[in-house]
Every structure is written in C-alpha cells, then in structure tokens.
Amino acid sequence: MGLLSVALLAGYVALYYGVFFALLSQFCKKFPLDAAVFFGAALWPALEFLRNYLFTGFPWGNLGYTQWLQLPHIQFARYAGIYGVSSMVVLFNLFIAALVIKRNVRRWTLLSFVVIFAGIIFISHKKINQKIGGPPVSVAVLQGNIDQYHKWDPAYVSEIQKVYEDLSETARKANKNSWVLWPETAVPGWIPNDEPMLKWVSGTVKKSGLVHVAGAVTQEGVTTCRNSAFLFSADGKILDRYDKMHLVPFGEFVPFRGILGNWVPVLNELGGFSSGESHKVLNPPGARVGVSICYESVFPEIAREETRNGAQVLVNLTNDGWYLDTAAPEQHFAMNVFRAVENNRPLVRAANTGISGFIGPDGRVLSKTRIGERTVLFGEISPSETETFYTRHGDLFAWICAAVSLIGIGFSFRKNSHENA
Image 1 (spheres, one colour):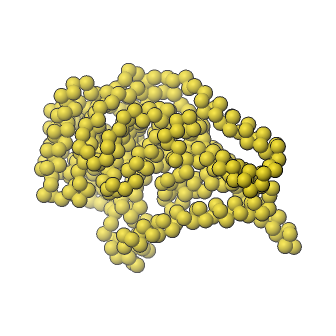
Image 2 (spheres, rainbow, N blue to C red):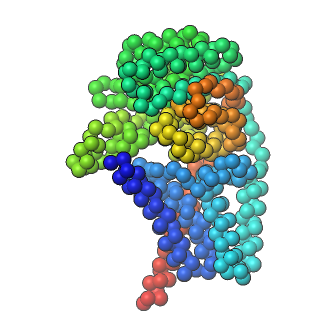
Image 3 (cartoon, helix red, strand yellow):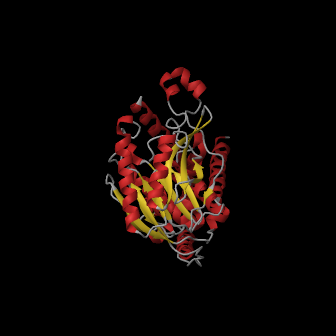
C-alpha cells in the first residue's frame, strides 16, 4: 500500500508537467515563438496555483523553491509570492530555449524581456521601510530528535520526557531567553486530557521560568481530536492554543472516507483528526505569533492570513522524522524561507529531527541545526509590522497568470478549430 500510495502521488503530480508541455507545444504551433514564451511563463505558475488547491492541495516542490539560497532572486516573492519566482525561472529558461531554437527572435521581444527582468530586479531590490514592532525577542528551540517509531510507544514515554526536561533546563541555564519552542507533537501524550501528562509539561515549563510554545495532540469531546500548539505561561498555565487548520490527507484525515474505505479497508484505521476553526494568532510576551504546524508551512495563504491577522513573527512547528535522511527535510525547510520573504516576517522553525532554524524577513538563513541531532538552538528575532504587497493583495499575480493562460489556451484552440473548418 505504501509503494502504491507513492506511485499514485508521483503520477498525480506528473500530470501537471504533462499538461504544461502539451499546452506549451500547442502554443508553439499556433503562436509566434516569442508569444509562446510569455504564455508558457504564465501557464507554469497557473498550474502550480491549481495544485495548491485541487484535491485539498499539494504544492510541494514548486519550481521557485530552487532559488531559496539566491537572496536577490527571491525578493520578488514580496510582490508575487512563490508563483512569481517560479514564473521568473520559467520565463528566463524559455527565452534562452527560444534563442537556441530560433535565433532571429524579434527585437521587440528581446527589448520586452530586458524590460521585464530589469523591472523585476528593480522592484525586488527596492528597500522596505522596516517597521519594528518592539524590542528583539530571544528564543530557544528544542530539537529532541525523537525516533518517529518511539514517539507514541508507551515504553519510551519516560525517556522522551527526560529529553525535553534536559533541553528545557539547557534553555533555562542560558538565562537570556523569552520563549522556548517545542516541535510538533513533542509531548508524548494528550493534553490537557491526560492529567499526569499535563502536570509533567506544566512542571517542566514552571521550572524553566520561561514562556513555552509546545506541540501536542488534544481531544474535545469523544470524537474531535486536534493537532495543536499550546502557549504556556512562565508559571506553567495554558494561556491559549492554535489548532492545525490544513491537515495531511491520509495521515491526519482520509478524504472521501465513505467511498475509499469500502475499497481499501485499512483507510478506515487512519487519520481521525479535525481541523482548527481559525487562523488564531498567539500572544507570548514581546510579539504576536502566527503558528503553522508541519505541512501548513507549504501553503502560502496560511502564513499570509496569519500576518493579516496581526502576526509579527511566524513560527513553524514540525515533525520531519517521517522523512528520515531523504531530501524532504531540506525541501521543507527551504519552503519556510519563502513564507518569511512573502510577508516580511522573521520565521523560527522547531523540528523534531531537524531542520530547525532562524530565518530573517529577507529570507536569509541566520542559523540552523543539522538533521538528526539533539540540541537547543538559540536566536534573536525582531518583530516586524511592515506589510508587503503580497500580504495585502495575496495571489493576485497567480490569478493574472491563470487568466493569461486561459486566454492563450482559448486562442490556440480557436485558431486550430478555424483551420480545421
């Protein structure tokens, strides 16, 4: 079943590439090569935008993420989001391909290309008038590096508790921290439902004398379970919590369970979580915090909505232990870089097995951990109040690309129908 699931997911994602090249071929046949380049540069981000929402969405690995280490390139995300960076990459490469295929590209096309890129570079490098929302806040990130197959085994509860007690004590001894961040589902039990577990967490927090944001699962009533981030005061009391909004299909919930469960009975045993009801912003001392849990960080609209709700700092709590030593932890970390740039917010990431880190509002990686190490990462962040064009207007660029693509598709097939007639 695992192999089949991976094959189906890979096949589904591959469809978008197939559609892109089929339509690009159509554009090249029906339009001058110059025009086909621009329609192609609009089509790619339009398809990524569609993949962000269709069938609950799976926007992993958008093309623009390849630029995560190229700070000058990714500043365009402040205006157009990740889709703008993807379009820029496609436009550049399609234009080079056009020059190779057809060397006598018209002068107006070359001029347009130069003007577009000059404009992007100018806009992207325009300095933002940074509004600081308060003094810097010192943060300690606990990276427990708990084996994924030990996390929910009762035999390892005491061991896991000891790990987080020791890490929390390390944060306390540093004597310079305002907050302590735990990863997603770091607590090896349900809170506040499990009274002994809640007592342990509260005691650990109180002993440190610091504000903590801890990932844990919780239950409301008999059937409602949530993946949450709890805000604890320095004296160990729960002040607030954020519930994960965008759940992982087949991991935390099963889409179309009534239909699929009849054909694949094992699905009835998976995913029993419910999504949160609002993009709540937490309020620890010193800043308003927008939290994303794991998979949520790959959806640009979630971080944007939290920023619009007043978040001055973004935090991502995750458990990437599922990925072991594959490329996925690096990819997941890179996507968080864009959430920081899109909204001009510092971002702190706490990951169970890594990669944890601090990211500046411009996407600069200030510090990060290695995968598979047990450590405490210390850093300092400055809350930001500055809103970007992307924060104010959202995926306007992606909608424009979708409209341009539909126009291109319509005209290309209309010409085709006219010729056949």
